[in-house]
Length: 242
Image 1: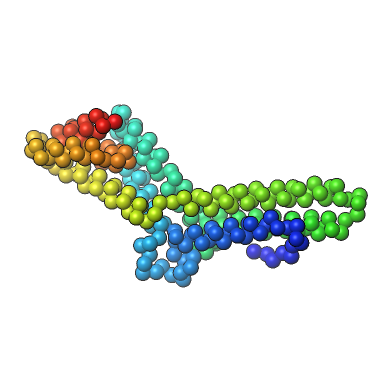
Image 2 (image 1 turned 90 degrees about the vertical axis):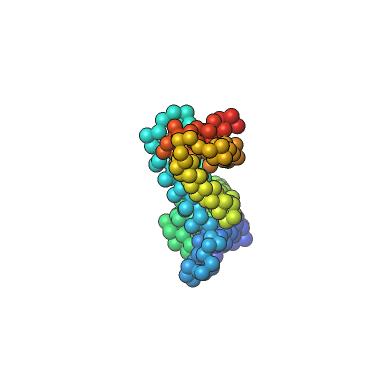
């Protein structure tokens, strides 16, 4: 960023620099390269690959719901779409910033910080050197520059919050494991004989009673034999639970 010499009145712009530092620090939880030169051996600690994988799971499930109709399919489609949205939004921000703050979104904010600092510095210097007749117009310009500073501060704070409010790696691992389990368990139920054993029926019912909402939605996406008796038992359990 350009190095501007600002008078004491320019304190509002300091928050921009501090927020930019906070954003860069938070990115170190998402991506390698912020404080690591290369992809490190312990890359599993980062959020980005986990969130990317989860979004991919939701995308694949939504694709499998294409063409499926009925109340269950519609409810599952809405739930998965809603579940996907915040994760996809976070990825968009992180990818737009980049590990080195060198991607388009980061460059846009760098430019805004530079231009805001420059505009405020210019008007403040002008006020110090102005004659009485020019002060009124310059004060209005100063207030406009300060309003731009506050707007930029709010935008940077919102940007920081958007990547700060994230799941932990362990929580994301649980969501990914639950998604994988939903697919495996559905395949297992559909592979059962047309007359499943009592123990298998009990397992299907237990799945329906214990599955979290997003897993239940994934069940619908992964089902290829909705009329299979075991699937019907699970579906009935889900319906009775809700």
